[in-house]
Amino acid sequence: MQLRILVGTVSGTAQRVADAIALACDDLASITVLPMDGLDMAVFDASAPLTLLCCSTYGSGDVPDNALGLYDALASDPRYLGHLRYGVIALGDSSHGESFCGGGLRFDERLADLGAQRVGDVLRIDALEEPEPEQVAVTWCRDWLARACN
Image 1 (spheres, one colour):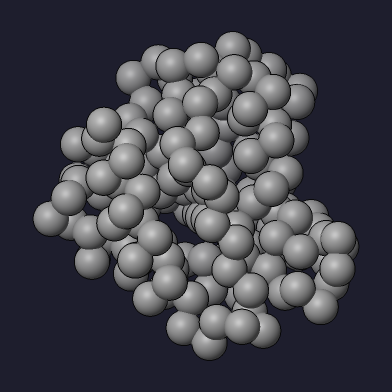
Image 2 (cartoon, rainbow, N blue to C red):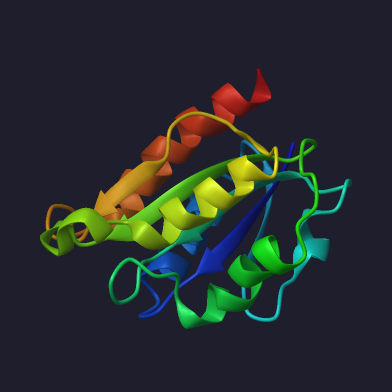
């Protein structure tokens, strides 16, 4: 199985999480990690493998700057994405209330609106509760990949 992880990050935490998954789950899938910088709708073409979005939250529930172009393209250049199977790891800080994990949740909402099929639930990682988000993400991803294979 091929897995592509798209990373939206501000401080590098989402990148570290994605890299940890790539190392720890390489026995389950062939994994490619791509920062969202400069990506557009072509990243979701019909040949797209299983996709995992690993996205932090910026400001008041916004997507990070490096993910903004891709996020905006989902609205400005919408296409039916019924072929796309995806998952989301959303990182945030619960002290921000309703905007907690907003970056990842915004991507999830837009992808679902375009017909993409989410596998499993969104993993929400709270910076206040999880000092080592990599471990939480790796454990979740191993289970998620098993579900995605079925």
